[in-house]
Every structure is written in structure tokens, then in C-alpha cells.
Amino acid sequence: MDLIANLALGFETALTPINIFWCFIGVLLGTLVGVLPGIGPTATIAMLLPITFTFSPVTALIMLSGIYYGAQYGGSTTAILINLPGESSSAVTAIDGYQMAKKGRAGAALATAALGSFFAGSVATLLLAIAAPPLARIALNFGAPEYFALIVLGLLVSISLAHGSVTKALGMIILGLLLGTVGQDIYTGTPRFTFGFLELYQGLNFVSVAVGVFGVAEIFRNLENERNREVMVKKVTSLWLTKDEFKRIIAPVIRGTVLGSLLGVLPGGGHVLSSFASYSAEKNLSKHKEEFGHGAIEGVAGPESANNAAAQTSFIPLLTLGIPAHPVMALIVGAFILQGITPGPNVINSQPALFWGIIASMWIGNILLVILNLPLIGLWVKMLTIPYRVLFPAIVLFASIGCYSINNNPFDVYAIILFGVLGYVLIRLGCEPAPLLLGFVLGPLLEEHLRRAMIISRGDPMIFLERPISATLLAIGLACVIFAVLPSIRNKRKEVFVEDD
Image 1 (tube, rainbow, N blue to C red):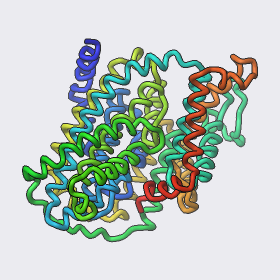
Image 2: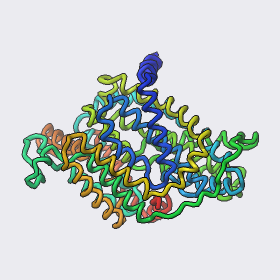
Image 3: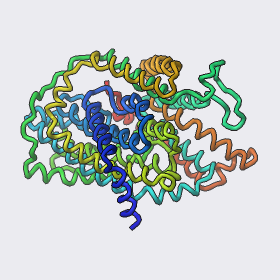
Image 4: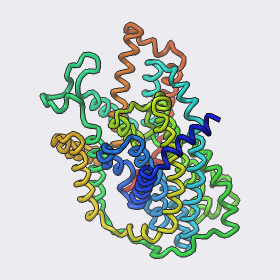
């Protein structure tokens, strides 16, 4: 009964005209950036963080969440129509979706992606609503050692799931942690790494780092790789599935939903991993194995359901523990902090309308996405022809104005340029910026809980191994890293986690 009462509170919050409007704007923007390859939800949310500063907390978080799961829908459109995934999790969809489009079944592929995404998103949101409260209650019993171990686990898993070199991912984590130490010491107030700049006494501006490393750096990279995109399907006709196609997608959608719901909780890249795992499962279980790679509808239904389910359940560690599962969630943590809210287990009790409002908005957002995606296919096809060199100056300008408006401080704009150049250099060196952002967000929390645990234990580091929960979490993290560096696994990672050039 508590669940029903809580969801009623959530829908009461989410169904206000202002929240419905911004939920619509969020999923519309999410679809748009999903359709346009190269921009992505991470860069978009980073750019829009400054704007949300003027919103109420619940409105801001509803919109930002909508951008994230909306991008999962939009990414499938480009994957199917031009064989270019708008989102990394849609890379698998392109394998069979594009082949279906070449055979004149683009409408059926897009309808499959939309329906699978809607079902998976709705079910995963229900799981989020059921699982979040008990997990939050458990988390309230966590002490400093447990939180420290949990954050270390999140960082280590993100290393093992990041694409490319494990060493480079570790280097990015360390760089992010170092950037997180800039400012005043949390206990003594002593300035650290400020280099005489008064603007750095409060630490680096999260928005500047996020916009620079993700937004501006991605723009540099995409301008470098700018190329004409040929849209093979100029007009999508029938969006109806045949009776046989509908029967064939039911089981893959359900299996994809289950896989995505489970793997989405993993830190690092659960939504990407889940789509690949789903495709592999469908290929092994299908009665039509010979069609895979040549337009198997199961190859669209399973991965699309999996990545959307994972997108919703990735909110579980964020809302219950305050730990971001991947860079987008790290940005949403930043949005919480900008609004003066500390994400974690206390949110459900201190801000019940916010907590349940976000969850309820996901159902509303999923309904809006189905309405947006299918009738407006023609519009998304036209969007694919817009060159980046037209879009990007406007994006950078608005991001800079937004960042300046938070503190009215020109230093924040200079920081965007600096971190944009740094992000671009890191990308060129083959270093992934995502672990850097996770390290930057989690660094202050890691330091706080480490020092608190050491004060409790009077300087004895064995406290982390003597407490069963923290010892178990650290052991799991170590096992993940060892697992990731095994030669067979390393080769698999190269296949799975690839850059979307």
C-alpha cells in the first residue's frame, strides 16, 4: 500500500503542467540528440546544466532524466536509417536494423525499437519504484567505511567496463580525483591547488568541467570527423508489424527487459553492456539464426529493450546510494548539488515529492516518447541532413552564456575553454573522459568518507577489511579489475566498447 501512496504522490508532482511541459522538452531534446550522431546525452546535459539552475529541483531533474532516456530512443533512428548509431548503446541495433531498412522494412524496425523501448522502460521504472525504498533503508545503515568501499567499487567497475586501455582508464580516474581536491580542505579549510586564484577556493565549477570535457571536446572531435551523412531511406512508409513479426519480438523484448534491468545497475556502462548481452543471447536462442546480420527483427527488439531498461534502472544506485552509475548519472548528481540537495538514501525521506516525482515522470516520458518517435519519423530523417558546423557554434554560445549566468563569473567561461582543450587532447591520446568525470564527482565524497573512517579507527586502515560489507565491496572491485585485464576479456572489451566516430 505504501508503494501505491508513494506513486500517487509522484504522479501528483509529475502531472503538474510545468513538469509535464519540461518532461516533454527533455524527451524531445533527448530524441533529437540521440538522432544526431556525435552529440549524445552526456554533452547535452552538460550544456544544459546551467539553465536548470533557475528551475525547481524536481522540474530540473525531470527534464535532465528525460534527455537521458529519450536519447536511447533517438539513437535507434540513425542506427536503423543510416547505419550510424546516435548513441553507443544503439551500435548493436544498427547491425540488423539497417539491413531491415535496406529491405524496405525501416518502418517495422523503427516500430519494433519504439514498442520494445516503451515496454522495457515502463517495466524497469516499476522495478525502480519497488527496489529503491528497501535499498535506501539498507544504505542508511552504511557507515563511512562502507561508503568508501562502495565508491571505490563504483570507480573500479567503471574502469573495467570502460573501453580501451585499463591503464588509461585508471589514469583518468586519478586525474578526476586530483581535480576534485582543488579548493579548501574539507576539515581544516586550507587552500589546495588554488595557485593564488580566489575563484578556485570553492573548487572547480562542476558545470565548467562537464561542459568543457564532454561538450566542447566532443564538438572539436565531431568537427574534425565531419562528413556528409547519406540518408538511404528518405521516407518511411508503413510502421505496422506483421502478425508473424509481432510474435517474433515478444520473447526478445521480455528477455532484453530482464537483462537490461539487471545490468543497468552496474557502474561504468551497463546500458551499453546490456544491449550487447541481449544481442548475443538472441543470436544463440533464436530459431532464425541465419537471419542475424541480414535483418533479423529479434536483433532490433532485444538490444533496444535492454538498453532502455538499463537506462531506467541506472537511476537505482543514484537515488538510493548517491553513487552515479556512469557519466550521465554523474551529471545528474551535479544537478542535485546545484539545487542544494545531497543525493543518497536520505532523499527518499527528506524530499519524497522529488524522489517519487522523478520516478512517475519516467512513465509519462515513455508515453510521450512513443507519441514523438513514430509520427515524427519524417522530421527526424530531415534532421539528419543538418551539418554540424551549423549547429555547434550556437550550442557552444548558449552553453557559455548559461555557465556564466550561474555565478556571473567570467572565470567559469575560461575554465570551459581550458577543459575543452584538455578533453580534446585526452580524446586524441586515446583516453576516455568518462572516468575523469566520475572521479571528479566522486573524489570529494571518497576523501570525506576515507578521512572520516580513519578518524573513527584512530588511523587504522584495517577498519575497511574488518567490516564485512566494506571488505566484500572492495573484494568485488578488485575481482572486476583482475577480470578486465585477462587477455580473453580484454579482446572482448575491444569489440564491445568502441567509440562512435
